[in-house]
Amino acid sequence: MPAISIRRLEPSDADDYRTIRLDALQRDPEAFGSIYSVEADFPLVAIADRLASSVVFGAYADGQIVGMVGLKQETGPKTSHKGFVFGLYVHPDWRGQSIGSRLVEALIASARDIVEQLTLSVVHDNNAAISLYQKLGFAVYGVEPRALKSTKGYSDEVLMALILPPD
Image (cartoon, rainbow, N blue to C red; front, side, top):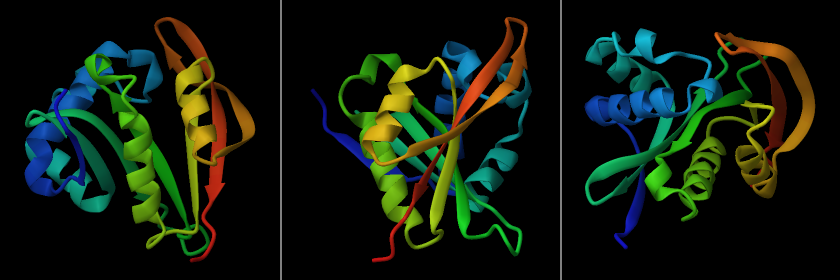
């Protein structure tokens, strides 16, 4: 089994990020707020800009990106203490090896220097993700009904938060 490395993605990693993001949108379309057909048309410069304006970690095995998770800091004067976790995904061939946990742990460690609180939303039937987040200290604070709409209908999202204690 190859070693897994976790690192922050830079704008120069835009092609890798595009690869894993499009894979996620194709394989698990109901788990994300965006859709493949929209993001497949994003120019690489737009993806590089996303990496420059947020914190995204990638998991690598054998030189290939196999997982991702991101953090976007809120920008308002009264909300900049919060960050939104987005896009957790691990390629199915690499699940069950704690890669998702390692990605989120790296994100939490990085977030401590940026924000005081993390929030996220998870499609209500994604029990594996909800369990992972709870294991890492996130708590459910609500459910947004009909948060996402697709050709399959509506999906509720579980809302979760983690308050980062000061060091």
